[in-house]
Image 1 (cartoon, rainbow, N blue to C red):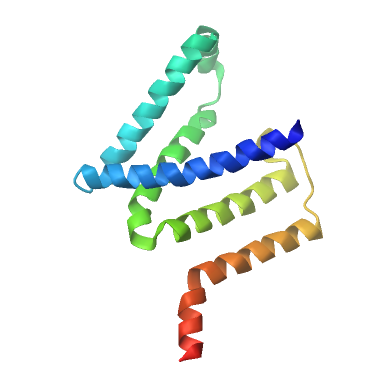
Image 2 (cartoon, rainbow, N blue to C red; image 1 turned 90 degrees about the vertical axis):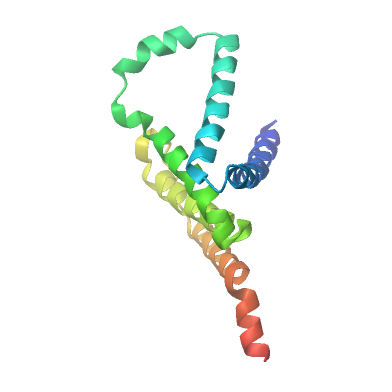
Length: 157
């Protein structure tokens, strides 16, 4: 049963790439306006989540509990909006593979730190040397992906 979670996580990664591509196309269709494209995209997502929350039940209980939550706990929405906005702006400038490669490495580095230190209530999972080695391999892979063609062209001429 645990393997299905890995498949879902992989599919979510595919979805992020598709989302970035679709949002970039939306921005082009809106005259190159990434702010409005991000707004419409977030609105569609918020509406979809709202419908699901209504159908699932428990929305009113959550709304009642919301004022007692610390304001910083809503920062995830702000960070998500900033990420989406930056994806729409950066995709045409640096390309999808560079954008998402850098974003994934940023996610991995921050997640290693959150796991290692148990930040924000996460379960503490100390980072081993082997996992750090895997991160180094990923960083090398990202560097090859970003700069490999330029380096090979320079050294093969």
